[in-house]
Image (cartoon, rainbow, N blue to C red; front, top):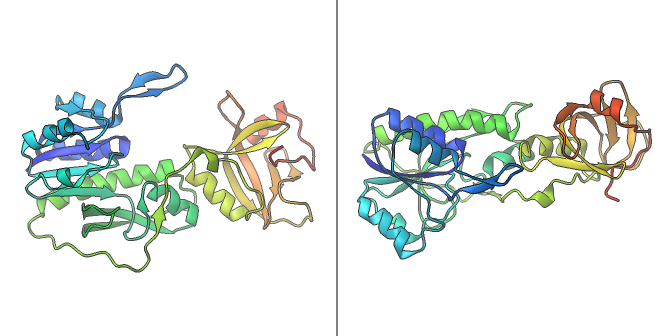
Length: 309
């Protein structure tokens, strides 16, 4: 097939690599414009853009596909199909209608659960035990199109969004190659109206831990928000990110947000239900370190307040 591929992060780059290896004609690659990155805020190309350049594929980076100029880019290719994976830009109806076989999306959930921007993170945050990849036909609605192919993936108890994205990127890359190879035989399955959930975009404002929640919920959010935006607490008037923590028993009567135990290797904070035993942190401007190293460098006392002050 003659393909236009649209994607941005490493999750999408894995699919582009697989499609290229399968011998498809990738006539155009669309990716988001270069973004400032790192401490120097240097403009950096996306993972998909870098992969396309490596394969000497044509890359375009329009800021929007709503302009006539951007739509002409797509129309002139006269593609059989557009394959989308975490592109991050809306495909207007005019673009959806251009390819001969329409547009398909590599979506990181088992639809209709977790339609939207952050299905991987929200699945971990909610405590789901399984997620997966759906290859779906795109339409105007948000991830509402018929599903062509589905692959389930287990969520491990210690999965972060980083590790789960890595698993799903491999499964998604394989699934989209299979879907294109079997495209004529696949029978689209209309999504059920039952069990619909929406995975809203992850916002930095969600990073601050709310100790009035249960320890289990906070521990899940820490894994879900790794590597972005991370979860943080304020202790000793300093914002400290928490990267590893587990829910623990709480035999104290301490208010949520107070340190109730300190050992050589970790420290524990009271929650509304249970307690959070913290094992890996990051101070402002520093790198991830063990709680043991943090405690050697910082004086924390039983009863210290980890609430926002």
